[in-house]
Image 1: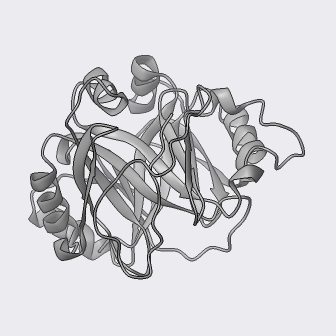
Image 2: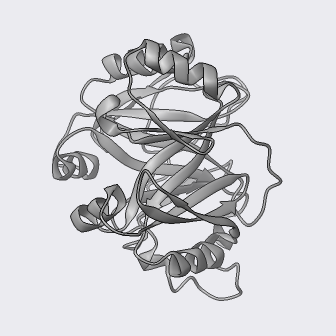
Length: 287
């Protein structure tokens, strides 16, 4: 009942500055502005490719302000779309999952999932804009990938037979990709169970105190164009998501970077497991 990794929500201190950053780096365009009462935050929504990014600035005490006080700016929630959001909401209730709704969206707290704060939206077709093609993955650091995979399959009506195993000795994790509709699309939640807590993902999970959202992936047709959409280097890049990671990938290779530091790439390293026919292989690279 999930179709796309539809959006990401980010906690930011200044929506205007963040909007300019997304425009400079990804060629994103502002779609709308409003207020989210549940989060007590003002929101600017920008579109990059066919995906949306919600830039949340606290309007006072609330979850977004709490996130900024604790972790600083960065990824706040992963967003997914469904063509049958009402039916999915009923399914969540049937599985004992508490959710809140505002406008056309459904909000799920991380204590209702394996640590992943989620926002669900109705499926919507959009014409692509900017330098990004689409979001396609949210990475969820979890304690038990088998139990977590079963949770997402049961709660969100996903077909577990389509899930793909992953493993990386270099980056210290094992897990699964909860592919929504392979081989047609890449969209999935990556479930990463840490096997080496001395490596980057393990250190992040320890710092966050348990299961959590780690990073997201976007696909781009030309990774070298990123940051030059305004005709100049992306001078704001170091402030984009300083406490989270974003991965940019082409059909041939992946490039990951933390906006807080320079990237180190290791082509060919990373996840192992079967490829879906017609689905391009990608290497895993991290900063």
